[in-house]
Structure formats: C-alpha cells, structure tokens
Image 1: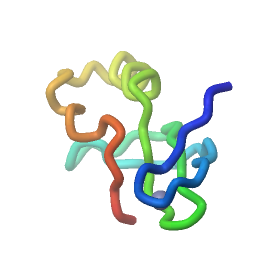
Image 2: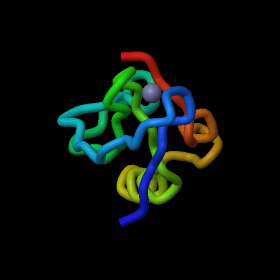
Image 3: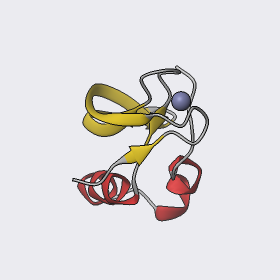
Image 4: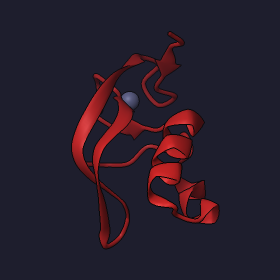
Length: 74
Ligand SMILES: [Zn+2]
C-alpha cells in the first residue's frame, strides 16, 4: 500500500472511510474512501479513489478536478 503524505504537515495520512461525504454540493455519497492527515484532519483523495467514486455515481470528471490531492477543511 502506498503512503500518502500530507503536504502541509509532512505526516503520513491514514486511509479512512467516510460514512457520507458531499463531493459535489447537493450530492452526498456514502462510504467514500479518503486519507486523513493525523495533524490537521484534512482529507486527501487519491485519483484512484476519485475514479471509483466517479464510476459509481457517473459524475462528470471536471467536477472532481478540485478534489485531487487538495486539502479540505472539515
Ligand atoms: Zn496535514
């Protein structure tokens, strides 16, 4: 399993499963895999995770551009 490092804190993020997550406003998804930084609790999504979620829900690719390796505040 490859390691995902939080670019902001330099710490290894661990994989978690979000019960629900709103990738796109108004469209909440269930059981979304993501990585969480242990320091800042930011969520980091890998392209693989985004792709899987995308194929499950048939959401257009450009909607996900902002989610690639970005840090989202909770
Ligand atoms: Zn962090």
